[in-house]
Image 1 (cartoon, rainbow, N blue to C red):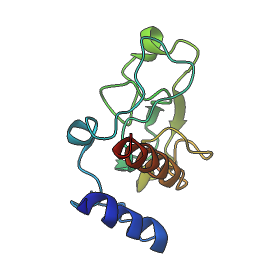
Image 2 (image 1 turned 45 degrees about the horizontal axis):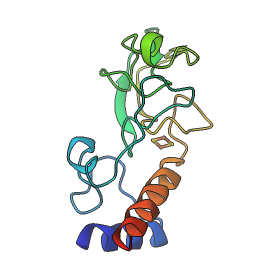
Image 3 (image 1 turned 30 degrees about the horizontal axis):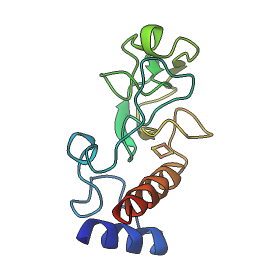
Length: 138
Ligand code: FES
């Protein structure tokens, strides 16, 4: 499978493009979720990945933002209040931009430097690929 081979190569060389979704790496979540299902349940105590690559966002100086920490929001990467029903134990992260800047906001919700991407999505991609490849041999 081309996608898996391309992805394994990208993971090996640590060459993952983050500004645009590489067509051969992984299709958008809506397409890939049937191949790489993301954990979904009625209520979650752990965040769920909203996507596997970070969001590139322009922040405005002095503006307050609420970064979705649970992964359930439909207005990613920002909160739309869905956590109240889907993940009541997880709250959005409120922050104010100190200046106008473009940042990469975490989409996999596994970052240790929220709301910013710290590369943890590579672990999410690796985990999902391993799960997918194991599924091929069942
Ligand atoms: S999207 Fe990169 S660490 Fe979550």
